[in-house]
Image 1 (spheres, rainbow, N blue to C red):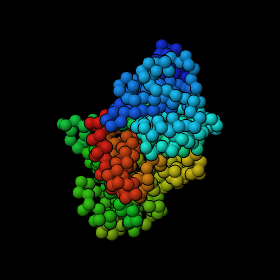
Image 2 (image 1 turned 90 degrees about the vertical axis):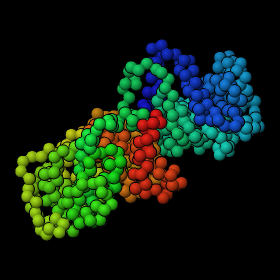
Image 3 (image 1 turned 180 degrees about the horizontal axis):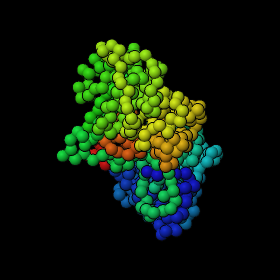
Image 4 (image 1 turned 45 degrees about the vertical axis):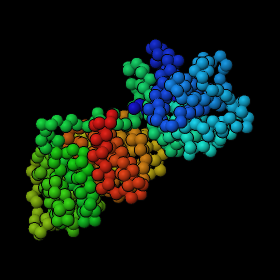
Length: 540
């Protein structure tokens, strides 16, 4: 889905109008989309009463079109004109002919009619303020919106294009803004809805396709997107019945340490759940005994270590075992010891720095011989401690193999960029986009409303924010999902978008399964992935 500024949306509509789709036709299609959603979502309710708050702008017109359609379909439809519309307004005339009951705020100074209608309504269409709204809220609207807010717990509120009181560019909100259960955007999502604090008010985001010409120049120039189920489904690999495990790639995961044993397990399980054919865990040798019994599906590469931390010499062993490996995940649970920093350096640069012999499990002081020649690394996902250790290297972006993906949270992004966390969070989209272009790689900037950006300048937002994912190990699962898709041969962009969207949806599903986001563990997120994939396959 396109994500646009108010100015871009106006330009899209203007170009569409010039190409033969009139503003009136766009309004008809928008109102029809709203009515169709009301019928589909709430048509089984015992009461069929719908009230619309109608403003003077286009979204007020959309609301009148929707009421006309719903009234003809048997709904008891009422239009409350919060702001005046001309008496000669053709949409008002049509609504009256369709037996829509109409009154205005000017004729209801004590708001008795509004209060009565809100008490009776099942669905409230919010068409007061549209995408052009900017703070502050006009004084005459404040009392009306305060009355409406008193009924929030009893109404199914559908915002037309945006919740009234939200600035669709900045995401700022008025104190009296009307929160929605569903926000229906016309043709494209307005960028302010994907910013805080506005995102707290939008509920579920839906988009009505206005069937505009497909080759509009303004739309082609948009480089910001929002992921949804259809987008994600297109990013996933095919699963032919005649496939074998080699069809779906081999992922090698260099991860884990004595301090963070579970990180390797969580990332590997995530990779398998997303469909990777073979996952091989390259871990410090002492971890094998505790992990192997929990994960019979994995194969293993036991690495030299120093006190349970991956040692520098392990890089040679990893590089010697890249045959048939189609993607490499490095970082979950590595720790930040110097010996592991040397491992990252040698893995990426091929340089060999002298150091004391490392232990390979029970084979004391066995040293892996340095590898001869240059080994081409497969596409990599670098996560967690791997990012912090990689950031120490000079010109590290130049060392990454083509098609790689970085998965920083804001703190790790701060280490990579030198920006403060506050600077990063103040403009997440542009931060991710700017550095993805600078580094010529794909970046997943994790957090509420995760952002994916790549070297081409495009960016994608995952429209999910949930505390269910605010748990240790959640990032390891995400890294495994993304790397598992990369191993299956999907491009970096597709792997990042699909992995992040599925991870977010699995977090929501896990919270729903457990009744609250509080008890969700990273392993619960993994177990919710199959349900998300099932929905993508059968529910779209």
